[in-house]
Figure 1 (cartoon, rainbow, N blue to C red):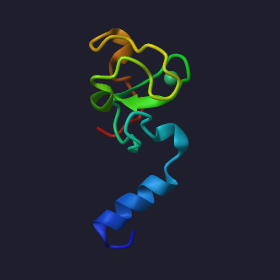
Figure 2 (tube, helix red, strand yellow; figure 1 turned 45 degrees about the vertical axis):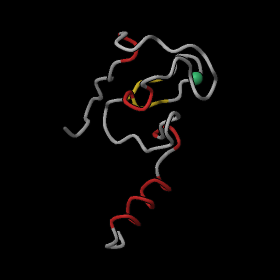
Figure 3 (cartoon, protein in one colour; figure 1 turned 30 degrees about the vertical axis):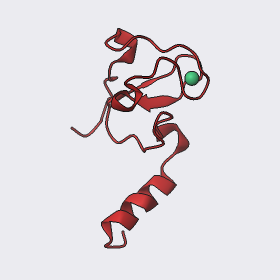
Length: 80
Ligand SMILES: [Zn+2]
């Protein structure tokens, strides 16, 4: 923590594990509103994936919005 909120957010992003970075936006995933591409297994934030028909990383077709496969996963132990 640096006391500078913008710097803190940047540092947090830099130290975040790669499997917690949204492949649609590059933002760190901080809650359970994400799903995994079933082909490359990378996560993306549901809100950021709106309008996408294919995975930004591997270009595999995504399930349609509202599909069960495109819903938030229940994350055990997640802070709510
Ligand atoms: Zn993919």
